[in-house]
Image (tube, rainbow, N blue to C red; front, side, top):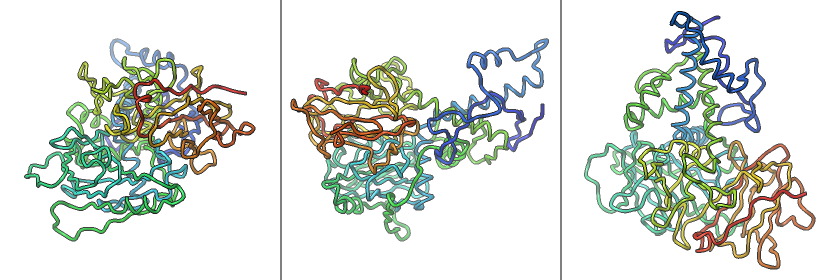
Length: 531
């Protein structure tokens, strides 16, 4: 069996054998199967029991491993540690994928704030955006630029999160992450000061102060659209945003607001070894702020060490490629489990709709988990819940869920019909919404690709339907929506097309929910298979 010495000085087996699967559809910078199916390969994992038996039965004659056993187990160790590193770093890998695509297209810097000036559609591959508010997303490096000031106009909504997806707390308040309507400015706008974790200088007055746990910060802003046929006012609102250094030592760069709707963008996380290159770049910026000794050790075990070259050889890269794809697939499995580590994600006990914070209460809106994904009852970080969430969403903040009538939003998601079967693009379904949908602002149903969690490409600019489109109601005020390749006769206004061979997931959004949504006296039906 041939071997190869890679650039990290680790002997690798040339025949990689059972270390994972490839794929065949564009995802990040990779090629992968349309539904995440493994590509045809000369090697095969076989049954999982067989794989585990093979590892457990590797020969140790007279208590010593053979050379082949050593090579196989070293490869397996790298694969396992790389896969676990990918799962642990899912929030950062997700954000880095967005940043890489944005900066490749538009350039980087505190002054660059891309805006989806024609709203998001299936041309932008990014996790579960809505199609009814206008997004602007930026990436700040407080390590490079120092403390930054962000000036926001009135009437926006958004959040600031670190690169672990944690909403950044606002000093001296109970707010975390939120700006605009759900934030400390309550939609009036203002000046927001972002500080790096190691900032020790006195903090000036006159700002809402956000101290990030990482030097890198993700900025997500949204403007509400009063008239979908006239987006100019929403664009103008977002273009009033200013970002500049707190202590100006040189000329402040003028703001740039490129139109992210004008091109195709793949902002999905990398599912090959590129993810580990990006983690190396992040570690060199963050240093010890990124993780504690144990997880810095995990990074080191796959060759990622602050300040040292990361140049894996071809064989190591092949293992890292497979580990990244396997990690992402595991994350997608976790994303729609109804119970994760004894915490129920079911919104309703008799429905298939889920939410990571479904067990929330007015006293603890996020339920047993806080927004750092710490289980309040026993004190551990729920890595499975965090990993699953950030494989289909790019952020969370208190303003995104609520137990106060008329504020925030409620989200419910499903990938299953009433029988628990996947929602398949070739099937026909009906979804029943009882009368008086409890959303003071509006409600919306949006379809997403089941594997990528990007907007579902069904040939429509926006694969969504909701109260702004005024679907026909039944005599009792309820609404039936239809999903399938062809519209039912006379129901085209209540129908979203789906594509045979392309499964999907669904998110129901209730904006400014009323009491009936919060106490769950109103609840949507499950998807019902119809002929």
